[in-house]
Length: 110
Image (cartoon, rainbow, N blue to C red; front, top):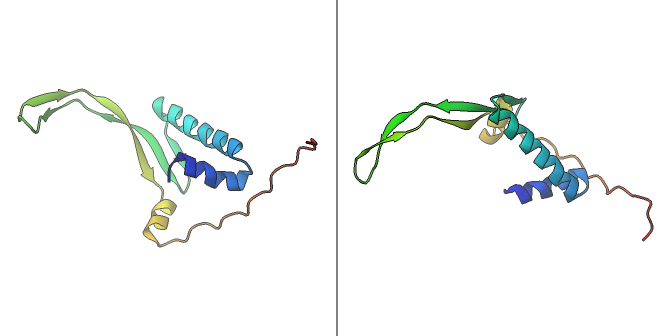
């Protein structure tokens, strides 16, 4: 499933693709900016997004065996929650899907 498929799945619950795309983008941007600033984002039942520090180290070039200095870096990290793990493991059933909302009527005549 890619981002477009996810938007299509969400639009069935929100009513239209535009609001689904805006909602998904807002959630992703908020998580990314919070993690980039060093905050931890915990979504109960789903998981935790956090920033992890990798120290500088010496690696080896696999072709030549020559040592290479790798700089310290920060990377995003995700730890799945217990409910998510159970669902993937098959020990818990998926939540029931809510019925799709009908599109809102605007009252405008065409």
